[in-house]
Structures are given as structure tokens and as C-alpha cells.
Image: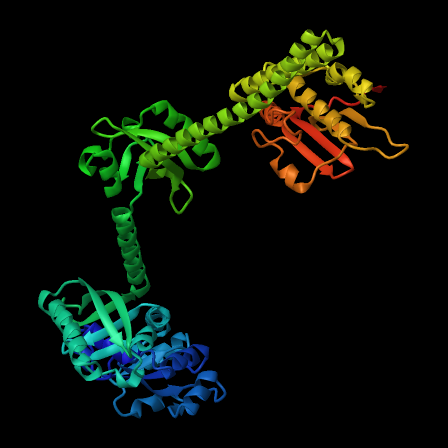
Length: 638
């Protein structure tokens, strides 16, 4: 701030040189014209102070210096300053207007001579009185230094402030503007000082600013405003404070304006408002039910879709526990425990109860609601009404079940037809053999009847296993012994046809298995392997064989059945586990592998197949969660 602007803003009592006036008596009108007797260092220091014009307020002028030593420092400085000098202090008496002698020699003799010889109109101060004058001069000097330092700090503050700071006189003319003001209005400093808002800005802006200025002038107190300014096409928003500046008599002589740029904050608030409106529109127009709760499970947000689905209005449900609308509140508690661990749960099937008591089936995605500091505030749940969808799904499943029943009946009928044909053929041969007394024919017919009975028995067992949901009953079982005993059930009959069955693997501690169910699945795979060998024509030097092996891995147990039979094509492998699919031309039920797969899956395992036409097949039963017990030896039995 320039000194002129500061002085005008203060409005204090000052003279035409802009120097504050001292309050003194009638003698203050008498100008002091002083001469110094003694040109030593004290004289030199005093002349220095007066040369810097710091003491003009004292109204004193040094017009002469006397000292018998022409090289005295005070005498030399006086000559340099154009002040009269002499080696005899009585020579000072003739100086025009002299009315004060200051004795700085410290000599009593000189002091007495001055008192005896000085003219009556001339007053004197000896070196002791001069000390008091010196102290007063020092105090005044220090005061001025402090004032200048304070003004400098104030100026630095104003110049470096990021806020707009202006001072206007009572007519609205600018007395001071800081650099921040220049940044916003884009007008040079020298073109602003002394101008009014109407000379600087366009009509609407100038009128708005002048109206606010007038409010301060009328009310004579600090006022706050929110102002909007458009400069060079750029819109700014300011929070402005205007306050009066008073003089020592409490009179308003000017006023100040301080404005803080709030544009970024206003724009942020506007963005927040728009986002809030956007989210409210999403909530209002979403077809999904959106409910938020606080940390205590009380409903905070209940959108229109929720009102439509559950029949409650927002007014009657807000603040109510969310468990009120759950059919099984304990399920929500379990769900919340999972949400706390995972942070969110998606597509959770749940059932709510509407206001009218009807069940509403939903697919719920529930997550924790957090603030910007990642503090949990509650939950937000987005639910889709799947009541009708589930109803249609159940109808479709019922239709599929009926279709499966029909397919099963057709398949069983087809199998039974083949079995009955075999039984009819066997019965016919029995009748003919009885009539003819042909024992060979009787034996062959009875064999066909026994095969038919065996197929009916297998079909019945397969149907029971396939249609019944059975939970495995595991008991401690030696896997290798179990595999060996299963292979033994068929190894003798297979051996009579020329197919060898071997079993080998790792010994180890027992594991929990359901030997009855799993034995049926493994036996089915071994029997199919024997049938695959029976259907192949082997080259010379190649014999049909089936290998059953047991492997213990890390986390699983494997039963592997390998044969060198006819193998399968890719198309056959793709159909292998379909109901009633068989490659045995009426000799199979088409359910064996389906049953085996079902039993293995009930154990939590899976079945894998590898096969190549003419090179045989490998079926692997893999059961999970079996600890690696380590190998304790190997056995092999033919």
C-alpha cells in the first residue's frame, strides 16, 4: 500500500506535509533555531539524526556549531551540511533567529560562560539537559522505526494476500488495491486508483457493487455479501466482507473490502448437488428395490420400487428395523456375518414379507456402505423381485421332470422289451427242449432265461440308484483292498473268456468311503472294460487285459480303470453319460455310467475319461479332500 493511500484511509489529524501534528501549548508555534556548543561525537550523532529528517515533528533547526577544534567530528559534519561553524561559541550569538543553545562540552566553565554571556532571548540546555533531549529523540526515533516496520509488515501482508483487498473513499473511489485484485479484474494498477466501479466495470456489475458499498456507508458497520462477478467471460463467486475505517474521532473516513474467491467451492457444491439429484433420480426411477440401513439395521432409505414391492410407504417404514420385512430374520443375521467378512454378497436368494403378508422372493446384493474415510456407515441392498421368475422356473423344472419321467419310462420300456424278447426266446427253447427231450436245448434256453433275469435285476438296481437321492454313508475303508475285492467279483468270469484283470496301487491308512455305493460304480467301470475287450479282435501276441490301480495324491484319491479294448470315438465319449445310451446293442441298460457318475458326484468327486478307437479306454474316479497319507508299499495281484 502506498503511504498516501494509507494516510487518506486513516483520516488522522495531519498537516499539509502529511505529517501527524503533535498536541502542544502556545509555545508550539515558536520555531526552535538551535546552535550547538561542542562539536564532539554527541554533536555528530545529533546532526546525523536531524539529517535523516526523522525529527521534523519536533520543529527544531540546527543553525550553527561552535568548537575550538577545527577537526572535531561534529564541526566537520556541520560544514558538510552547510551549517554555520565557529571556533568561539560567542560567535553564534549573532545568528539570525537564534533562540536555543545546546551545550555538549560537559565543561562547567563553558556552561557558566554561556549563562553569563548569552543574550536574554536565547535559552540554553547544558549537557545534562541535552541528555534528556537525546533520550526523547531516541524514543521518537524508535517509535518511528516501529511504525515503519509495522507499516512494512502490513504492506507485505496486503501485497502477498491471495484474497482481494481494496480501500475506497466515501465517494467510492479506489484508494488502494492489492495485487490479487489486479489478477481478477485484469486492469493495471495505475488505471484503478482514483476510479469508481462505474468507470471500471459494466453497468450491472458496477451497480451491484455500488449498492453493497452504499449499505456499508448507510449502516456504518461490517457487512457480509455473496457476490458473482464476470470478467473477460470468466465467472467468479466471492464471499465478501465490507467494513468502515474510522479516524481518531470515530468518524468514518473510508471503507475496506475483502473478498475471498469461492468459485471452486461453489462449483464443487453445485457438482455435489447435481450428483445428489442424479442419485435421487436413480433411486426414484430404479425398478430394483434399494434399501439402505444404519449400523443398527434401521432403514434409512426406502425407494419407490421398495414401496411398490413391499407395500409400505417411506414414512411408515423409515427408522424401522430391516428384520421386520424378512421372513426369517436369522437368515439376515447370517448374511450380515458374511458381509462383514467379505464386504459384499451378490445374488443372495431371500424371502421377504410384504405389508399384506404375501411372500416376495428376491435376489439380493448386499454390501457395506462406507464414507470417504472408509468408515462403515451401514449397508446398501439392491434387490430384484424374482417371485414370478422363480414360479416360472419351478414350472419349467416340473415340466423337465415330467419329460425326464417320460423319457425314463420310454427307456425302461425299451429295455424291458429287449429283456422280454430274450425271455420269450429262452422260454420257447425250454418248451421245445421239453417236448423233444433235448437237454442241450433245455440248457441253452435256461441260460437265456437266467440272462434275462440278471438284466432285469441290473435294470431295477440301476433305476433305484439313479432315481433315489442317497447320501453316502462313509466308513473307514482300505482303498487298495476295496479295489481288489471289487475286481475279484468279475475277474473269474472274465478270465474264462480270456481277459485278465490286475489290481495294484499304494498301501496306506484307511480313508472314509461308502463301499457299497462306490463299489457299484467301480464294478460298473470294470465290467464295461471287460465288455470293451470282448468286442475287440486282438492281433497275434496281444491279449485282452484290464488294469485297476489306486493312487494317493495331495488332496485326492484316484481309482483308475484301464483296458486295451475297442476304445471309443469322440462322438461316443460325448454321449457316454446320457441316460439310456448304450453301445452294447441291447445288452446294456444305458444307465450304468449315469449311475456311476451320480454316485461319484454324491461323494463330491468326478469321473474322467480318455479313449482312442482301437487302443482302449481309461476311466478315472477322483475323490477330493483325501489327505496325502504317503506311500507305504505296493502290491499287485493277477
